[in-house]
Amino acid sequence: MKAIQLERYGGPEVLQLVKIDKPDVGNRDVLVEIKAIGVNYADVARREGKYVVPTPLPFIPGAEVAGVIKEVGKDVKRFKPGMRVVSLIESAGYSEYAAIPEMTLAPIPDGVEYRDAVALPLQGQTAYHILKTMGRLEKGETVLVHAAAGGVGAIAVQLAKLFGAGKVIATASSEEKLAHAKNMGADHLVNYTEVGWESKVRELTDGKGVDVALEMVGGDIFRKTLKCLAPFGRMVVFGAASGERSPMDAGELMQRNQSVVGFFLPQIMKNYEVYQNSFKELLDYVRNGDLQLTIGGTFDLEEAAEAQRLLQGRKTMGKLVLTTSYKTES
Image (tube, rainbow, N blue to C red):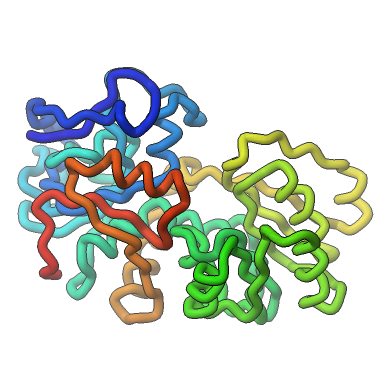
């Protein structure tokens, strides 16, 4: 089969198309013929050797895959050949086939395409659990979503409204991206490249601040976002894209009964029931038309380097997807 592999860390050019054997299928695994693959910043971090856990070489990146089951292990009970499935895996998604543990799979309902399903395992689940599980969003509360035109952000804006948020404030770096966030349902728009954006956020809440804030940049953005929190507000941290440290004064949190909460999706995946229920809910939202997924571009598997280059350069909006023998039938 074809796969994209890196043998050294570096820029997009280290991603090479190779031919390797199909993976062996364990007793509790299924062999999936991959149709669509999600492209994520985690893939970039893997390629650069900067991911939160070590990346052994040689390495095949790719954590989000959707496709059709071709073979099942002898102890697999819930899935059969021919079923359409989507999954979040640790690695090896940039390929034509993958052996995937049964416990990580979710069936794709009729009416949902592969490229839409593959936008959910990482970014959809992240947005869902940041808001509901870690942010404990309650009806009527105000939510601040940074990078609201991105993969997580665009989904988070919509889910916040579906979960009952009273007001969603979206930030982005350009008028085009802010317009996209508005189309996703954001109530107020703020350009975070402008000086004093945090003051504008507070003005939009009549000085109170936001109840839940989503933060994944770190450094100066972290510190300014903290200033946007209301009393009893929760800031959920799910990344550090700037690479900068985010020091804070615990005393300030105490004075306003505020919380800073960390989020790491693999911990959610350890709870099978929670993980599967949220997956089903997200897929149902898509099938019913309640959740709109923005596909920022589709690329052949062989174009993985270009897809990562565009993602890293912040030249796109929405989800980037690699395809193998992708067809639009659902």
